[in-house]
Image (tube, rainbow, N blue to C red):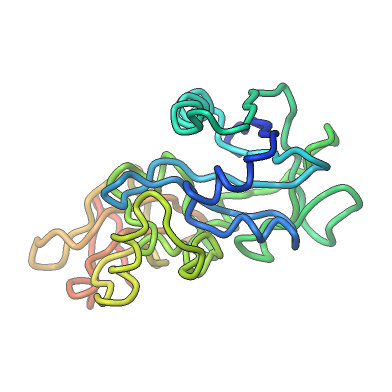
Length: 242
């Protein structure tokens, strides 16, 4: 499990500030945790995270390698807004099954269980196996600076809202939703053998059909050109099938 960090946001403008930046509707905090991302102006992925309300504070749960850069970016965007940002020493706990008291359900998929921020122990779980089984991407692996979030399944994972109004990168995302058919994206594939993450996937004729990512139990997450992923494919000696 990727190490996580918690940024605390407080102040009277916190909700308004976040609403103008993130891909999802901050109003979802009334129902539980919110999964969202910040995009570049060109609509490409920058960082994803979870938001959880705790009294008058919003906790932002982000992968530790991204925490410092995200904190700097948020500080740059807030200008004169009444928002206080602080990188905390709190930790993230995770587990499966019924959501215990004081925890929140992972909003992406029911198979991902719960998240908590009170220092309790995490359960020992093969999270990669769950991600592969349900085609759930992770930052730094399937989610890269070249990613468009709709190709990565953010709509299916409840990470984007198309009615909330403007945010950075919103125009490109809305155009992909309403005016184009996705011809590329993440998909679950069967794999015989294995290959390093990032290995190109080739068709039988040698054309590049995509890229191989996380693998577990004979399955994998792959980024594919759907028009080419119509038959057996290979990745560094491994056989890949959509």
